[in-house]
Length: 512
Image 1: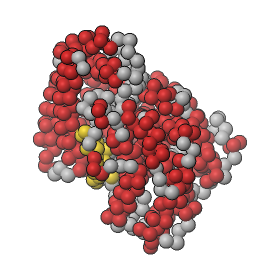
Image 2 (image 1 turned 30 degrees about the vertical axis):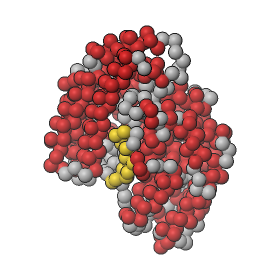
Image 3 (image 1 turned 45 degrees about the vertical axis):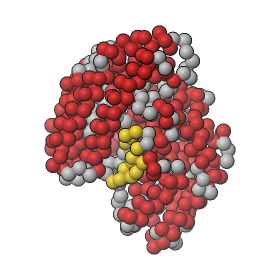
Image 4 (image 1 turned 135 degrees about the vertical axis):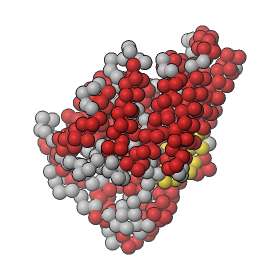
């Protein structure tokens, strides 16, 4: 290792440690911190954010990058050091545009806003959050002002989450996807929805958590390098490759809400636990993008966890855990229930077919808020109108309307939601490639075995961390650029038999 590379890695490790310390504080606030700690926690987060940012834009890093770019010029894309230099250069140039004091302001405001949201949402109190969200929009616009070369105020936020994407590319992708999804939603919802009464029964919290833990252990989640806790809005957080934590929520009147939240966050954690350990402490030891990360949570939650082969193994075990609730319920009835398609209010509860319409709504609102076409004071009413237009339902209150997602109340407005739909697209594409390579994967799942799927993902996706761009990673792993067809094919093959659909029903021109 050359002297400049050794110094750069030492500096990056120090920055990483500051970020990990901030992550611990955030995890604590979202799990166990008493409400009285919010003000001090915001200050602490601001301090750590400012220190990490100051170190990340130090002129010495620029000089080291200059030397290392000459040193690594011409190396293969497979070379770790060349990839590290490329990624650090990208982040360094981005970070240099943003003043440390602004980073501190954003961090402190996000911590205070999050704490307020945890009380305001259950109280259906948008008025409490309105000035905080107005401040968030103001700060998000100010952040965009540091990137005057971007076409829209959303672009720097989107690129930070999903490198290479812009508002224009996301809009075009969403337009194509929407044209194909709306007829499918219309065709399915014209039929009676599946009966999911078997899921709406009392189920004790401890038993729900225990069952979920048994499943993710079979998935490959390493509890020696992770843990699970409860929170308001489930998330995964990594402090190091040896400490990857997930959270869930439990509803005792819903048999599967905690389970699917657990499977979702486990997918994120499997990605992080699968990154090569020798990349620890560097920017390479991260997910390639928000979308790639989401592809793993959606893959393990939906393509695996809502599949019939999965439940051929696990349903008898779920019945044994909840005999009074499910003992007399056939597998086919249960499988239809967990794949029920219906127009619904809550994004995180939405089925696979309507889910992306929720994402598109939020993406459009982000653009409208940032570009001044929509004021925060008008957001609740705009939300209700758009939900009725897009999904055929109207929220009865703000709790299940504009307040339902934590994202705008714990981070910027912009770049927060497109990754969910990008992840859905990639989840189907990765899974299809895995099954082509290892055709026994579905049969393995029916035996409760996931080693082949987990191994393929670890080899082709996880181990690389952020070494490759999202576009490079998808093409390397699947042999094709990211596209909408694998996802649409997956939805059709799954929901056509469940709902008895005919191809002629899917007219592109029919309205929702």
